Image (cartoon, rainbow, N blue to C red; front, side, top):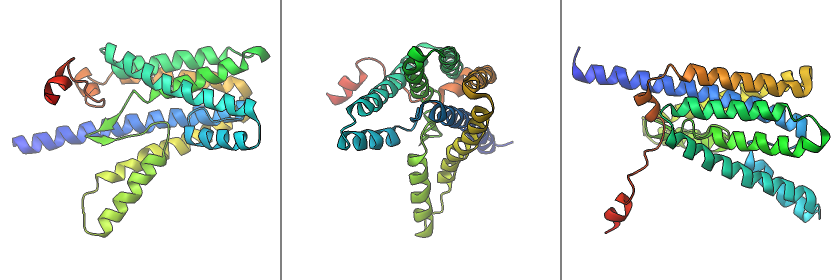
Length: 240
């Protein structure tokens, strides 16, 4: 086997592993978003929708609901930041991030008292922000896990480039997170309608099972799915 062929095989395996991860995590996000929306009436991972709804609430004079949604957006951003910090400090980045998400969802599922419902909502939102740190790109192509607007936009632009003569097809992988999100949302909606708030337990169990499966992925390969953080001071040296 030639070196070039070996490299192609390794690259294909990396890509397929990444796509399986992205599809599974997007499935988790879809389950969580559908469950959260049915339980709370607001999105827990679709911050574009929450931004629009917050703006509408402001124009209607509903400052309370606007404050709830704006707070959710802030919590989502903080969850993303926490996910990056945790993944940076961990040897098994995907396992640790997904494990933390599963634990947060399990904790949220225990918050069934009326005075804890807002805490449950924000905890779910925080976990959905955190899960985005699990996989950031596949072979250099950016991937969104809890939102699909960007993926669909990149997919559409890829179609446009193909029409005008660019025959690269890497953009087709952008449909994977959309498909995972749709299927997950369907399953989450069915589970919530059948079991009510107990559906969160099932979602948390799925997140933990996904974390355990991620343990089988070699650490060097896991690092390929996240952005590299340059050593401290390197950016300053390059600027000089």
